[in-house]
Length: 213
Image (cartoon, rainbow, N blue to C red; front, side):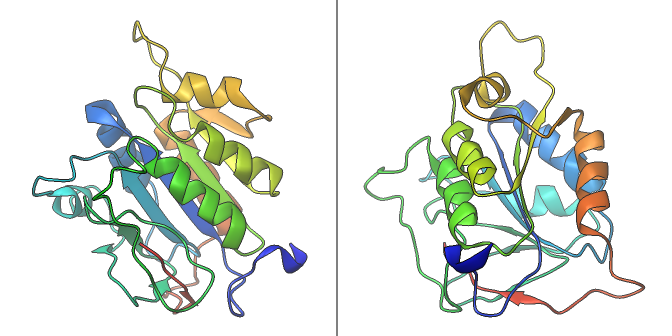
């Protein structure tokens, strides 16, 4: 990827996943449930959540996956084989340096655009292999960010659109800009992620990448 914005020496994969609503939560659990211990990638997850309410997302996701699920904090260095989420009022983003920073939700500047925020940061700063995944949700968050990942040379994946009466995130992502590499069930998406990034041989790697929230 040349000088486009690689992290300080990090060349491992990053998987960014975005979803919204109850079906999106279910899709996230199904994708994470298909990712094995030792996955050779950092996994970063954004689910639309109210900024003024207590969130139990970490507990819920921990029940769905064998990967460690951590709430990212300022100055935290990310590790391959681990899933990270932000706080409801501190949006998750991939940073260009080993020092983390915060993207606060107090001014609602990124309201309903937190998936795009993550995806665009991954397009800017991830190593040579990176994947963006849009799962179920309403509206069109993730479409612009997934297009940025596509144009930066990353892999794009979208869950198969459901039977809902409204046009939601998967439909908008598919229609927005640029070909989608994989369209399928959460289980197929999980299998494609594993096939593309690989699994450490009998151990979790200690690869470190920078963080921004």
